[in-house]
Length: 278
Image (cartoon, rainbow, N blue to C red; front, top):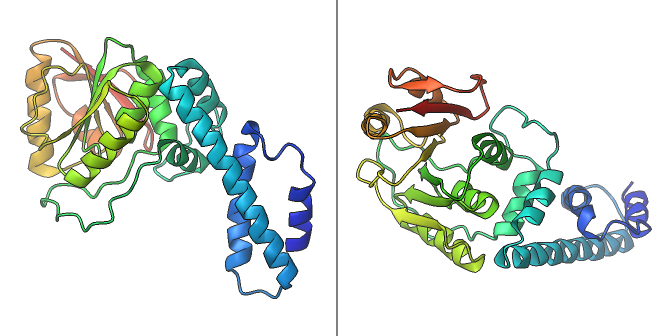
């Protein structure tokens, strides 16, 4: 089985170009499975598999380097079109699982996960998990973000939402995150890609200045009284000016229950919901 699969890869002349990225990722997953399994196979097959894995990794790295250079030179439309083409389906699949698009964006952003032990979160804060990329692209498209917008991402983690929003729409973005190591990783990525409009603040969301935000995003970063406090602050902001809110996960129902918001999208479990206020 491994020999046949390797033979297919070795004669595929279209595998190593830019458009073969998704296929290479799938191939790498299969090779990792083969190499990690305990089934019998010859030493020759193992060496061929290791060599092929190295070739596929090198091809992926070359694609990521090229696209990162395009981002630094402002070829946003080209990158946006390319990312859209990497989606598995036109409409985002519901749910919070990850897919190949997350692996692609991980290779593109090259965020370095902190190796240090992170401080323990406060009781009502939720353990960080990045928003699946398919939902980030859906959010950017449905909000119609413009350069005049300022997106605020509560519990930004390492900044996937803020980085992609600024990269693909040109909007200003602020990621608010209490973990210093995550903030440092996001800032390093923004500098490396020349994304000067993506900024990250090490701050408690209850204390952050929200006056500059036009769009606020929550992927259930906290719950209970902390979520209630932040929603109260957003309600106060909405009495001063119109704002928009996007949410994903369990916090969506609590946002929808606020008297000062109105839903502007169909409420679908496992998909970003949009609200307006003010």
